[in-house]
Image (cartoon, rainbow, N blue to C red; front, side):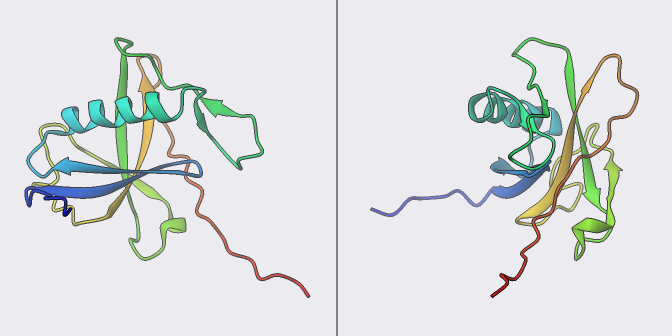
Length: 134
């Protein structure tokens, strides 16, 4: 049975630490709505928090429960072809994926900003494939 996917959506990749969360969002949805969708997915998938580093690390960022005062801030790659080049803040107030000209499978970093935090940093780890030694 074929699944009918509407054409008004876009898949976005949201990165934090070693995690990548793929979300299918409405192209016209505000980033406030997208943030709520992302937070719901994070609460369900990462109840113990988001890893900040290697999966063997115990250092995590807690995902705030529903109703807590938390804002999701986004960053876009400085160089889309080299994610290790860093991230620059993306101003999403009043914007949506269409107005920001995001394409299918665009990559965005995200950070969870609490009321007492001035400007959060984007913690993103890019996987590196090392050749096996023989």
